[in-house]
Image (cartoon, rainbow, N blue to C red; front, top):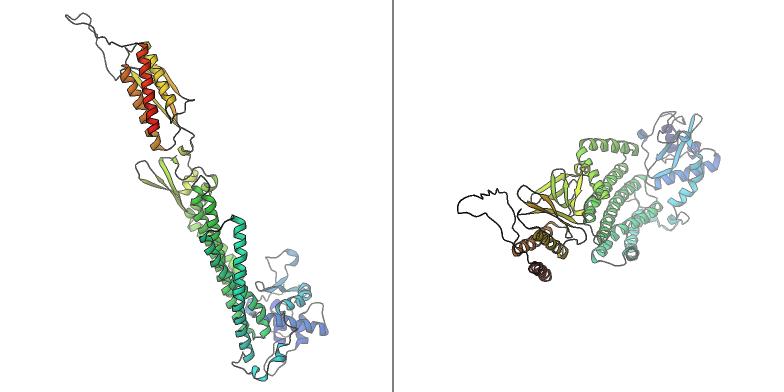
Length: 526
């Protein structure tokens, strides 16, 4: 690689890094390395170069030349057109440091130069304390080629102090989260409190890791050791954050379940596990992508791979994706609730469960239908469970020779039965003589049952039918059935067939009153 060449990002980084590295028997040439500093010369440029190199080493960042573009006019296609000619050295760990093209040279940007002092103070907050001045000679004894005694002891002391501090941090985290919980729900359940205790551990570890990372640069470790430790801390942080988010999802679902238990519909209860599973899958996917960037995979490649992989998964699992979207449409639109009797296409039954992929509907014969949610969301659904009342219509056919007076009294009696029925609307009904049938005089009975479930409707029908049957039997009203009557008036020694009806009005009224009393007694017993 040519010396002093600033014509590409790779050459510029090589000039900076090679001349700021202390080789065996050779001191760094900071003056040559400072040529990469835009707008600075002399001692000021050398001072900035030393700080920048110490920042990179202190954060455990390693230069991999093969990953740095060598094109003279390299353009970052992810950036705006005005600043596209720039290259960020460490986009994840140190995005503030980047090179930009100035004429034919690649130099550290003006923004980076201006922020080096601030970045340095953040990475080395204790730099004013000259730690090495207090270290005895034996502390500089090399345990390995890369580690001295004082560095190992300093790291162990840091871990011990962080562990002790962790107890205090955890107590503070639990106290804060308990306050938030009481503010949100005004009560504490044992299950939610256990979840708070559980989530406090990874949060404590995240804070401890943060404190250790802030202290680690002070130990002036070799970049190889720092890189190893920081990579390990990054992995641990990702794992702990996944644990925290998973626990928060569980806690949020618990809060949602408590809310859903106060609503009249059970569909909200079915939504909780679906939301929980989807959010947990998203957290795991993002965690895996973050791990890939930690092990050195280019973030752009990760995003591109995730996009292509997501597209491939979507294409290969179209039905699953459609059913998932169908589930959300059902939960958003709420065309029915758990326990509703619905008619969806050729399927009729009670909704028992709305799952991640399909919904379970139990038919009247107790068989079970599983309908994919994407199909269910597109069907015309007749929600019988959403009815305000259950309509019931039937016809009663009486004989043609029934006298008009008896017919009218019988109809009035049926109307009174409908009015007194405990499970029928008494302000919307029809009991009328509506048709001359082929073999009967037809009385239409149209009523609306208040009870909405199927079993209650059948019980209400039974009460209504029995009352009408008793009324007809005691009044002497005969129900007709398909028949033919042959009248032979001139047959020897025979007389014509004639029905005899008792039309005494007082008797008929007493019969109606007795039937209504029987209904009232039945209502009280129920």
